[in-house]
Each structure stands twice: as C-alpha cells, then as structure tokens.
Image (cartoon, rainbow, N blue to C red; front, side, top):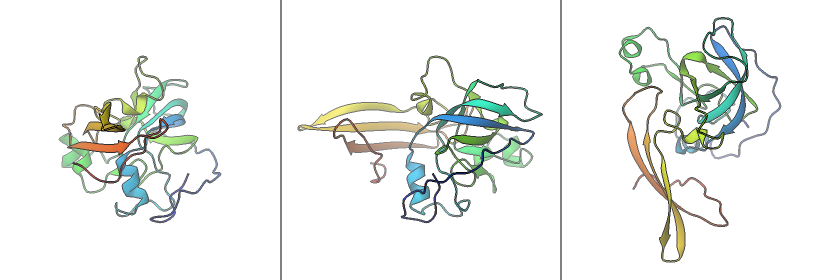
Length: 200
C-alpha cells in the first residue's frame, strides 16, 4: 500500500521484491501495527515523506534474506522493525545514543518504506529479535516497537471504549520515553480504529 498525497486513500501497488544491501535484511512482513504516526503521514502532517512511501513502522516479520555483512540474523528468524530506521552512526547525536534527534534520520514508513507491504528492507542496526512469548499480532505492541501499550476496555454508560496508554519510545534499546499518549475510541462490532483526537 502506497501513500500518494495527503487525504487520499492508500493505493495498492505491485512492486518487485527488493534486494537487501550489505547491511540490510529483507523481511517478509507478518504483521504491522497501525500507529497514530501513520495517520500523521497519510494526512500530510509530517513534512517531506519519501514519494509514494509505504507507511507502517510497527513491523513484525521473518528474515527472508540477509546482506553480506549481516552477522546477527538468519533466514526464518522473527524480527521487529521500529519507527527509527536509519542514522549515520557518526554524528554527535548518534555517538551519544540520541539518534532520533539528529538532523537527517530516516524513519520507517515516512522517509523509507514501511510495513504495509509483503516485504520490507530494514537496516540491521534497527532490527531486533521478537521473543517467543509474543505472537505476530502482539509483536507490534512489544517495547521498542510501540513503547509499553496498556489496552483496556472501559464501560462508559453503555458504550465500550478502548483506552490506550503508551509510553512511546522512538528508538530501540533503552531510549527514554518521548511522550505519553492517551486515546479513547468507541468500539463497535469488536473493531477499534485509532483515534484522531489527540492526547487527552
């Protein structure tokens, strides 16, 4: 699914399976969460997206192929791919462990293709193993992909709502939480859709 322009539906597209570079993984996508940030991308609220970008950054998949310098993951292993998708690794922010604050980071589903696809290329440095205790569907909610979500149903006078509280970390591996988000959305027929109303 590709993003074409703000306010328009995503467009189904048939594209060739990409080849991984030396430090990349080719990942077969098994699940991808829908995040508030994805709505910002498709609504045009995040500047300078990659043209025709594939959104989605809470990705769980299996390694299909690995680049020649990849030494951490092999075919068939389950991995997660978060929002922060690439950095130079050399600037002062990267060296200080604050990669998401640098001037030119690349973000999965915004400035590089994301997980609303069958296959995804990901930088080895920003992939991590999904523990056995998580299903594919639970993986996108794993810490590092979407922070620490806490979902619960609340009865509001005969109306069920999903209340989500997430400590949303923008990077993998010990970065402090960036924000706290509370969102409520009515649930009908067992389906919940991310809200656009913003933090409470």
